[in-house]
Length: 88
Image (cartoon, rainbow, N blue to C red; front, side, top):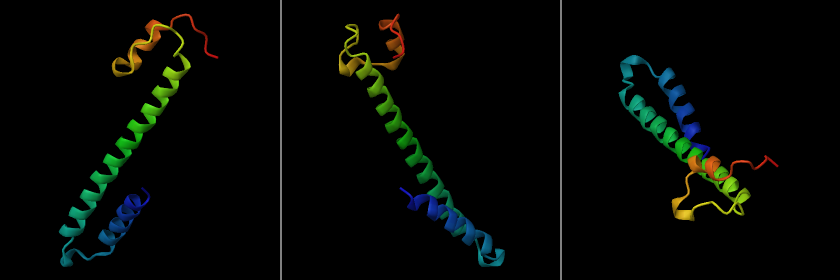
């Protein structure tokens, strides 16, 4: 996971140190691809973290009696089914 940001930094430095007359197009293309990859990895990590947080919330309210089956759970409906529960 840490390699992608390192590659981005390395390519940025290489791009900055490369004279214009030597052509920077291939370095820029590589930098663009690494940036897209890093953004994708970050988005996937956020999705995993969101899923973990959602699972924690559902676990907390699993005895509520109004939660839908696992395949139909949506965080949006949680506040509706568990109104009146305190945050403890």
